[in-house]
Length: 400
Image (tube, rainbow, N blue to C red; front, top):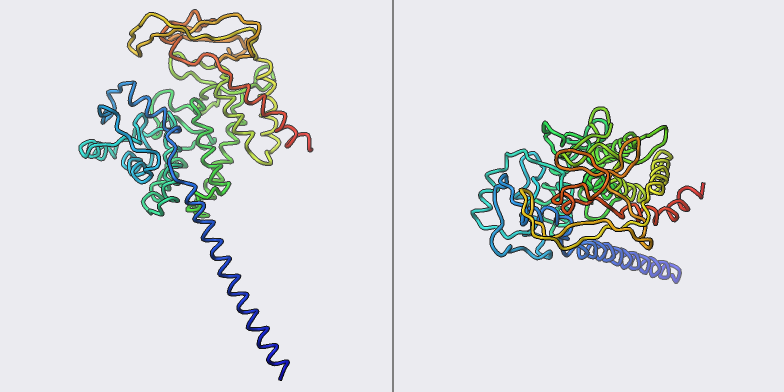
């Protein structure tokens, strides 16, 4: 009798303990989910800054609406209002146009005008577009659980996947246009911006929990093709790998001209940003390790010493493109940190500059003032690569 009572009590205690444990586990899961949601309390305006800057300060007759006086904007914490704007600007094909402020408080009339342009196909990745909107919509869905944000993000992802070339590259605009925007585009962070979004999804970041297995597989395939494209487009000169051009021909994969002052050449700014992204990949394959190490050698070899770029005040100059009150000059300074030019000439590897007439020159002083002061001809971006390299090498190269 005593044994039966004892067994009954033990069984009851065990059941009670299990119930308590399951309740505790359930509360932990709920708390974890709540914490994840609470982490997303705003949409960062910085990734949209290029869009907003162009809308407010560079008039484009192609814009369907223009800024209101005073530039009324939603606060970053007004997630639903911002996300509703993003959905409003999304085109029927799933992509977005560039150069609008997605944080702008629009009038009913402005909203009607944007809505009426839904069928337009001026959809692009330029100036941080499409991949940035998708990331913001994922935050909005995670924070609000509103299904419309998930649907819009998935529509955007399908647009992104459909726009990828079979060789793994992405154009600047999709549907394709009959100009340089058809090129595989590394300029302004297009390629690594797209790849970073795909990597975040594949890394199971919590805001992308809505992406199902079927779409995950498509994203994995697109990511792998993107890496393959990066490897294949690295410029080989005299049997040695260097880095990349801002854009590469979508068929031949060779360096290609873009705008009239953006020649086919070696481009250090975009290449450095691309390498920083590649360094973020865990367990990189041998071909990615080779790409990174070859780029590091190039960045070391292309350093420019005793040189500093200085911005100075200058008489007001009005051109068809901008109003300038500054100029840029190059000074010799033995204390200056190493610097790099944005462009290096193919084959000769000489620092390269260019005017709007497509005339190549070899010093900043030979560039017309409007382009001299209005474009980034020098860069320190490779320094970040060189700073990161020792730690990356120790982790992924030396251990082997």
